[in-house]
Image 1 (tube, rainbow, N blue to C red):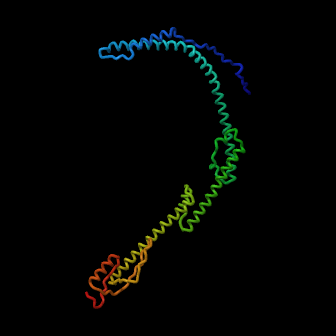
Image 2: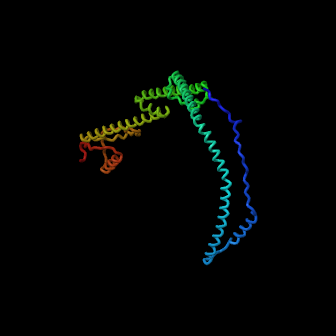
Length: 308
């Protein structure tokens, strides 16, 4: 059944008779002069404590005059507003009749539009699934543009926008796969587990950042190993020196030997030699102080005929 739509433009004539109200204050000029002269009598007056009673009387008279004028204004305004209030009430009745009819029509239109939009959304979702499947992309990664639901958006336009998104995602996936493969290869060459570094990349770090982090970690690991080896070598030397000390072996000084410059995380070569020293007691004491200052370990080894 087709409902007949009646046009109201010609049939309805909202005819309103409006006569602007005229408000006049008779003899306004005389009234203005009277009020001005009466008020001017009491302007700029200085009152003392003795004049308080008179001042209150003046204030009361002036307030009465102001109130009388304002009360008359309100009275006239109420009279003027009566036909306006009546007019507004009548127009509200007419508007309510129209609105009550519009509401169910509006609801019906919105229901139909919602159904059409749902159907259109279903159609677009099908297009997304189709295109995403062709590229091997998860359709949930496609960002749905609300503008696609507008009737002005054609299927050609929608497909082009979806393809653009999918191709970008496919390109990103390919780049990510290459980056991950590079990180894995880099980690394998350094004999480390790549799992944590790949996780760092997936959290947003660039390949360059991840490689720098791997290099820094390897440098710290190498430094730790060198410190460990140096500590073990130092402990070994001290143990050997302690053993020689306990066996009574005398270390000697080789004047031709020059200690190499110490390198980072390495210990200098340690040599042990026997020498025969001849000199005065003072020279021996000075030599002993020098060796102590330089950290040279010395153990006594008595030669035949030496003074005990």
